[in-house]
Image 1 (cartoon, one colour):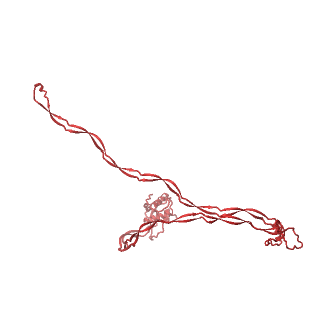
Image 2 (cartoon, one colour):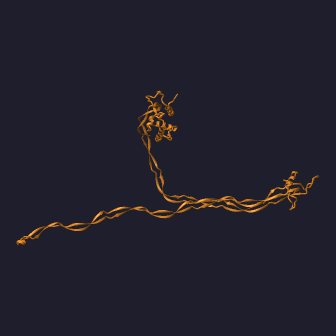
Image 3 (cartoon, one colour):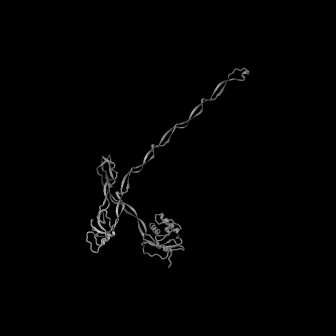
Length: 461
């Protein structure tokens, strides 16, 4: 049996939601060629109704009667007591110690004489094999023996005269001298008076207006006819003017604000680079090289106790050995040993106090309770009018289910705050979860990528 890709996709997206058992048609209604449908879950439908609800429970109003205080003076610590670390160097002392430079040596020799020769290890081993108690022999015991002389060697040894330890050193703080610019006078503004500006001009001022006057005139006919009649002529006298210099205001007096720059001064100051520190200095151990004489190989012996009677048949070897003992040699050396280790002592720097005025509580604050009635309001509530059910909805067909469409779906879900993951065009579990949550929050059908969901996300095909 073949299963449509759209039906398979719807089954993959179908969440575990309980729906009513109403019958759903086995084929989508009014389907057209090229369209794909899937049975999806439609969420329950609700309507808004009003209901009187209490918005504020009956309570009590509490009024606070403030506390009363009185003012007094009190010593306040402005700088707390501190501790200063003072390093104390280690102290050493000189002691004398006796060191064994050559141990006491017991030697088997041919006799008890000082110039007697030592015996060989082979002879001593032969005597021991013969039943002589070599280990418990005492100095002065003599035996008949063969010997191999004992050899010694001088070796050097490093003797510890001062243990490895640590010493402390105070490293003072470090400063560097830098230049610092200090403002000695801040920037300001200054109001300056700008005086008025005048200009000089010349102006014609009339000092006498135009007028008319009668003046005597000559009659030309008088000379001819000898007439004596007087002639008067009305003459127009023009106005008189005087040129004067005049100051004219060109621009009135005003003020302007001038920015006065700040005055600075460069001074040299010290800048802290590092604080005072305690530095630990490791001091190596000291050794003194001394020489020691130690046996290089033990003497071997084959011998018969000298005081014993010799049984018949035994032959004297011609050698006699006696156990001698050379006392140990010691040497007294001087050693420098640690007497008091380096440590750090604390010095108490007393606190600095200041007298300040403080308030002391005279009476505590009190509360007064007043009953407050409950408050109500009409609230809109959602009432279910239809149960969740399954219905045929048009979804994306396989031909439209491209990586580009899935990437758009992922981007749209991410923009709306639903984490669909990277917009890579892959319909994974995270994308399906984000799609289902968006459909539920938007009261859309769940269980498939419906066209309603695409429209709600603003995606066009």
